[in-house]
Image (tube, rainbow, N blue to C red):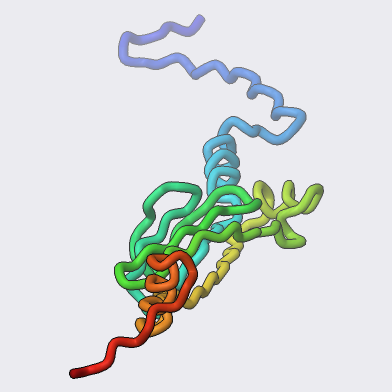
Length: 161
């Protein structure tokens, strides 16, 4: 018979190792997958509005966005109302279509907005020329005022004494 001393240690019992998982362990990769999907590509849309002369106040769909030249980010394609105002010039008010490019149309938009690994830029440019106010010639204006004042009959031209 064998005696055990107090300082002797018993051999450690071996336990069976757990079976390897049958599929890939996605728990460790979950943060990586979430990060990859969150930085996936999207379309960056911007429109630059310029005018001649520069310095006109720009309003897009009634909202003031700055003075020309100005670059504004936009989310949706469609028709935008562009209004330009500058002192000493006619106010310009136009509706400008910004149609979706081929890569932003269904079903390709699913790929480019959510799955494409890079950012796609869609930059648009709108340029306008502001006009001076139309004022009639002074002589013609005075002549029409005289005709209105006399009921349509021409007045005799005054002569100098």
